[in-house]
Image (cartoon, rainbow, N blue to C red; front, top):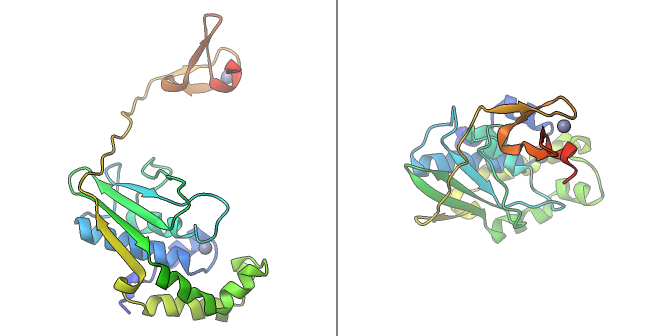
Length: 198
Ligand SMILES: [Zn+2]
Ligand SMILES: [Zn+2]
């Protein structure tokens, strides 16, 4: 196991608990950056599209993807497709796109671990004995990239980020700041969406 795939302590702290999926996303992010030849994103130039949805397990991997790539939700570099799949497309306008998905064989391998028996009984990851978390983490760290990931280059992938604007207005009803793209007009006055009643 190459050490570089083990997330730094701050990533576990950010994520909040010890689980195997944040580190899987972290590894996926590092591999995708290597594949595309991009550095960890400081600003707004690298985009990730996780295919996770809601109400299914293993979405924790997206926090690992953010930790590795710097392509974060807050920088508007992350957009979920909500397909309910454990896959992520990574896109850099100058370097192209690559999609990483978790192989079914790898996911099946989790079945035998105590960690998931606890999860299925309803225990939250932070309540699971540390030994059970370490056991499954060490198993993940020992797997090869080939066993874990299906990798597809996506030469036709297109994405146009929204052009940013600093323009803002004050809502005439609640008095709060609203960015112009979202300002609406009601009875000839500028209002925010909640105040517009639309
Ligand atoms: Zn987690
Ligand atoms: Zn308002």
